[in-house]
Image (cartoon, rainbow, N blue to C red):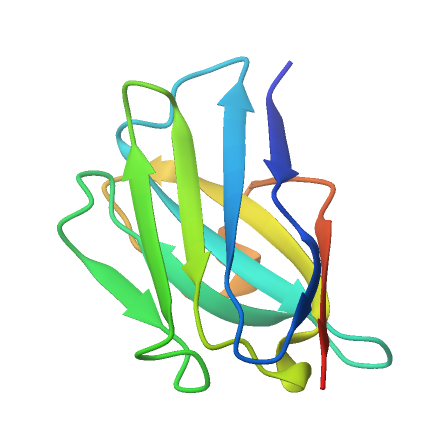
Length: 125
């Protein structure tokens, strides 16, 4: 059974930092693209960042470029999201996702096959 488990969310003041982790189990994703999405209250889930299987290529939403960094450790089957200079508008449930297809770096939600349960990030002003 494939599981993606996010951790590292919490409450932080504006300007602060958090590091999210997503640990995969049940299969390896070392050849698959992985990504982070978020969903704020009353809004649709949106793309945040994605990373290629090797970690050499990344994509970011314009709203987080220069503040967030996605990375991965294939030996640990884990992907990370370092979030710096957080803003109140970053408040959302953050979801980790993995693509079943090999060697991809998708940004579209429908292209991801596996999802975590989400972790809450709240940024106070």
